[in-house]
Length: 157
Image (cartoon, rainbow, N blue to C red; front, side, top):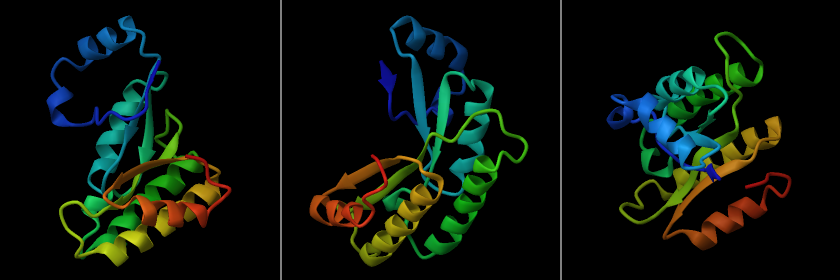
């Protein structure tokens, strides 16, 4: 069994993380994918995954709910981390497993709808560049999400 989406970098897991992960292993979870959601999560995601490189695997991306006025700056910071990880620049212990958590979310706010589209396309290009799968978040945006994903047939989900 693989946990394909756990924000284990969240501070709620910090205390007792070793015990929590041991329990997960005992329950049959073979590995956990840990998605980033913005530029501030990059450091925490990579640090926790590097502490457990054979069990936790990082994905980096800009979650659609975090696409705001600074979305381009956010993407630049995340892309630099993706590039460093994929080029094995130190410190690197674990491999980047995917680009994510990325997608579209129209549930709470559509103010940055077009920016979400552009951010998703940009991150899909990263996935193409590095031949990585994507970890998709889609809420109240299924048709638009699928249409953008179809623009990138070589990228796997």
